[in-house]
Image (cartoon, rainbow, N blue to C red; front, side, top):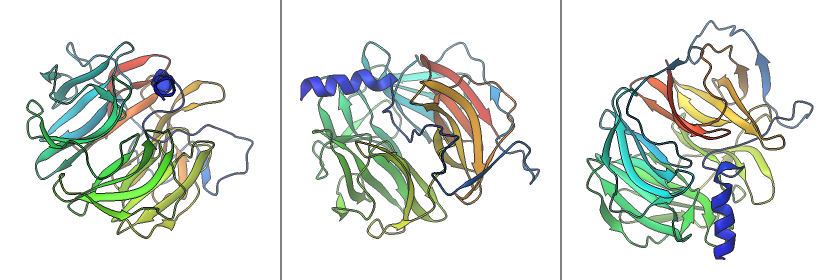
Length: 332
């Protein structure tokens, strides 16, 4: 078991990282989404111009951190710097000046954890620690400095690469990978971060990890992922966490991470896992089934980015490409 988890940790710079990763197969007919490359016929320039933010002090390069917008700041927490797992906490209001809230938070150093906002606090959930133990603890903080243990062992099984979002005044947790390396499809929710209720032990969608969790059109969404054997290209939605409805399949032309911004869905960056090529493409959709590749100004490094919506902008705060990154870009 330990060797298996060590190998998984070493793959932090490979295929299986937080978020949804697919590869490009331009000669494939799979997927039902039509794609249009080039000029945006709607004359909507959102997401087309990317600006790099310069700064002298910044978080170190790292893989698989957690990140969130909270208290008018962008936060990045933990991750893997290439040698060690981290439990530091950094924040910025403008993307240029970053302040280290703490270099040694109360929770253990970790990767593949989740960060979400509820009730004027940040909540850090689960992940993989430096002993290669998969976790199911829950921590909270109102300032990024002091972290309080809310649950040492939550009722959901220990896991990493889970999907966590805030929706309808609850934290929702679904899927991920358990301590045995198996993909999951259970769904849990909590309105206080401490008491957790299981919505379903086995959702309608196939078990998976590494997918993208979204809140869009007043529903929970899950897009793509990895079932332990194959890359998935499906999408599912739910308003109660119990009943999930299958939506459009996702085109294999989309290689990167999904995020909701300006009432649209964007896919930024990505990786072809067959060639190990990284991308800095940007795609946009208004309905999950009308994807358009944008002509982009701003040459951010090809990568799997950390994407965050903050201050009415979409941000890239570091990511993983041919090496770990800490560059900062935004579009509006």
